[in-house]
Image 1: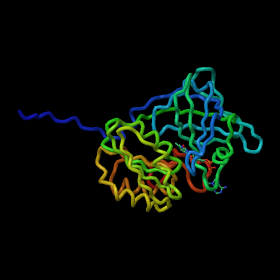
Image 2 (image 1 turned 90 degrees about the vertical axis):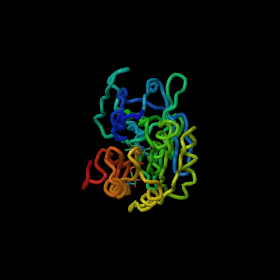
Image 3 (image 1 turned 45 degrees about the vertical axis):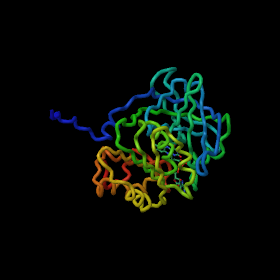
Image 4 (image 1 turned 135 degrees about the horizontal axis):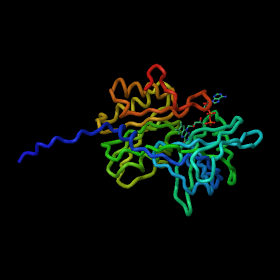
Length: 291
Ligand SMILES: Cc1cc2nc3c(=O)[nH]c(=O)nc-3n(C[C@H](O)[C@H](O)[C@H](O)COP(=O)(O)OP(=O)(O)OC[C@H]3O[C@@H](n4cnc5c(N)ncnc54)[C@H](O)[C@@H]3O)c2cc1C
């Protein structure tokens, strides 16, 4: 007998990414550095932990925390404090502080969590990069958030990640948060040979990870060339791009206008911008065409 059942319409992939969220207890945690390691030529891994991390939660591959650093001159750490033990909320400092966004890479340990923070050491480093380069065991930070987590969609036909050195930490979460059988193409626009990228992402059982190295440039030509070499992006494939904001403007235009991908299927996020201190990643990367 012929099956006349109409298949249930598949919602656009990123709609599911947006909906399947979770709220974490929003607080400021005192963090002590327990390890510092040059994990790849341009990346310093700083591991932090402490009693405040006993209930740390972070369920989304694109989660971020706001990290507060000591003043490089005075050494004073100005940062928010929790409203109370176990409570949700913070009290912001009444003085200027130094903070930047980073991707938490949590690891369960006895009685809580350790968090790896992988810092790209910028060629012209700001306070965060400079701090990471000279970080030592026992140094103190304050880690705020993550406030919310959007879980990776679990029924993708494929995933395309477009990254630079600052968003590869998130890529390393993406490849572990999707189910086995999902193929991932990682376009890595990094300086130098990039021969470390595949090793940095590691292997995930059942998840084929194909790394395509691209030249990082403001025109986006390297990334666009790598995209052109991929098979056509079907409706079940999700594209996530993050990194240097100026270079992502032409990439975003290509995804949206040339390929016609809806915002729900192609998400592009500026993580930093050449020549700009502490980019606000909530601001549209292309002000002429905001979402
Ligand atoms: C959601 C999210 C997650 C992120 N995750 C990570 C992560 O896991 N790892 C990571 O490395 N980064 C991550 N980033 C990016 C990180 O927040 C930025 O790279 C951050 O700005 C670095 O801080 P900084 O103090 O080193 O540099 P900033 O002071 O913020 O400066 C950034 C850039 O501006 C330029 N600049 C600054 N001052 C000057 C100056 N005086 N003259 C010329 N140029 C200057 C430089 O090009 C410098 O590289 C993330 C960002 C977001 C939004």
